[in-house]
Image (cartoon, rainbow, N blue to C red; front, side):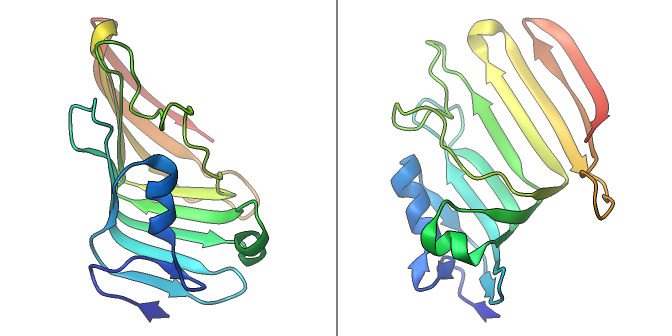
Length: 178
């Protein structure tokens, strides 16, 4: 596999993948660790310490980050579109979704709505956390997410648990989903 230094970004067919994300999202996207591309009919892209900057309205400078991101994609779709992701795995991902006091959402990208990203055929999450904040509604919820091993043909089971305040009331949740 090819590898690069901490300041480099994923490169597929000579194109830095992380360069495309800021153009679409108008957010700073950084790979602060090593990145690798395992060349095969379904290339596996790996990047360590990936960070996506938050909107100016955000309460924190980072909207999302992960210790490691692995994505296996369809090479033909990379060349001819639309992009198809066979699988993705995230290690210690953190996602902050929030609304400002005037109702603006940090997941709105340049007034064009939520950024449309392809959904992977399978997704594995190791030690994930999603936080949702809406001060106007009195909501601040944190949910821990971890996926379990899936069968070869079935969906990936996910366990979630969280707590916080939902519409100014104490809130807890725990469950499993597929």
